[in-house]
Length: 579
Image (cartoon, rainbow, N blue to C red):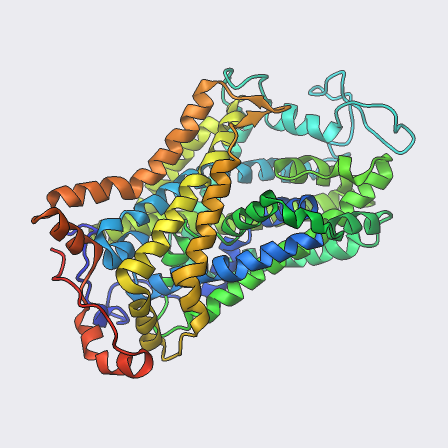
């Protein structure tokens, strides 16, 4: 049985319509799928807060720097990698460097863990969408069965009183039904359980037929959020206090640029925002023709994604400014990030507008379409990884996708118990942290230094018939690895244990589970590397040479003269093929 380690792929057949691999019906399907995947919850609830908290307009300096020397080059590398080999992440990395071929496994493990908690957010959004049809909106008042004696509906005439907002109590006590401590797991929240099942049914129906179907779904799901954002933007800037909120968003604090944390936050946000090092970008590109201009696509996708993040800041802070004016509080006491923004603060602001039900409905419909694209990409990326590993399952893709969805649903049930938010927090904190950054460094080292950056560039140039500019070479060889290393060091230096509530540390098992997830991600490329070093014949040096370098394919040899004419022939001699 053929396994994923297959470095003798016949590249000359990779662009053939008869290679058995699906392909996009149109370029628009591909672009919308990539944009829909990259643009998600983080664009709305993370970037605006980071921009505000790290110098406002000054934060754009390190953010744009990381975008152009780390983000766009990584997206370009992944799109080019998937497109050239027409393989998912597992087979693609075994094709460029067998020793580090497990990089694809590490990506899929991280994608799997992230996907579990991502769909849980989808279930929360469905709950709020259903509640948005109630009049009055249930998160606007105290005195409900789920409210406590601390519930307090603040307004401009009661600025000296304190308490817990009705929207926060609705989220914590009605939606999540949270327990008081991580050790108290509690029973399943049956409403969220049903909504989680509904979320997975929706996702499955969108992807089970493959990209031929999901590529059409994104025509709505990838464009509808922009329509709603534009509507909310124009509504937001007309609100009293909107200018104050936007002023906080864009104020320039140049002193923040002197702090390492500002630069570290900019780097980590680029990873989270663009969705690199998870695998779906490689998967989506593998359905392209090899002649497609992947470098241009990477630039467009990245700029659209980051532009969306910046634009979302105006949508968020215009309403936050309005809320601060309504409640008589400074913007600094209103602003927040993460679930607290989209499930407590922003809905509370919308609830004070005329026609509040309408605004809440379109807001949560927007969140659904933001989330479903990323969830579809996650499922497609994981199923493609399975099918590339076991090609015999390709005729049964629908059943494979169903089995995958059921497994992720069952694991997601741990996040919808009454103590499930604490488990969700662990997944969210550790599934895309240090393990992801180290995987990114291994990825770019494998391509640039073991497969060979010059060789990779020549292959891209040859199949696209486009010149690859010096910018890409400098980034892939030097700047991008340096920036990734900087993010890794920042993450290690500024690491602190996961907390809950008012910065209360988790019990010992929380930290243990978190590091277990990190080790699981890293084992994706460490364990296969050790296995193949043991199984390969020869001395230690011979084993490393066989596993680190792959010989040129017949296609590359036949086009050697063309490559020399474009980029020169100063290349090292590669060792014999890895067997």
